[in-house]
Length: 224
Image (cartoon, rainbow, N blue to C red; front, side, top):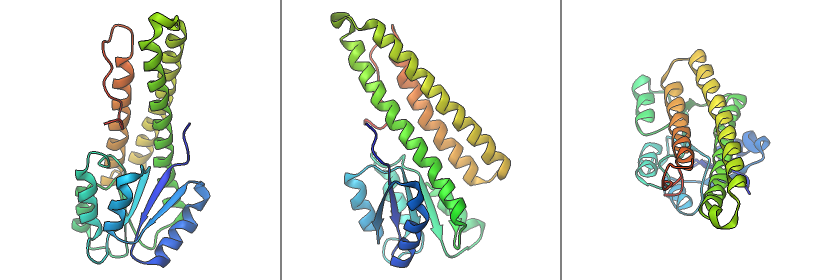
């Protein structure tokens, strides 16, 4: 069963963390605070997160360095990162954020509605991916024991249902990509669309491997 998604909030100023919590509380997910890059990396060692909101300007390990560490880890490299900054140094500064692995880059003060909408997209994708992984794992168990237990028809039905659910997510992701492209053909749109495409491609590949005659199924995304 999929529990609430966890969202990691990273900022060295308590008042900024409080403001983020107030904005995102309406999503009814689990909000986890980190007051430094080091604290954020520790939290990522034990918990899975749907998205990370990362302040750029922090003493010690700044947002760019923190993101670099996150992207180097196998466990965390695919977690979406949204950079938040109170300073706009121009296109070069923004490009550095995308180069560090961010899927979006938002300057303060930001529109609460826009931030909440962006975060909700990644939360929804995370929840759907979790459900698909759970169903695929159950299906694999049924397929492996299908010959002995007589659950072949049940497995085939579950496989069809799982494929249909994934198709629905793929359709939503395609619509999101078109919407982002219509809004602004900037690096944020390209990075977000690419991230969604990678996730869904991996899930589709794993599901196709479960089809009869496909051979041994590879590890599902997020199981490595």
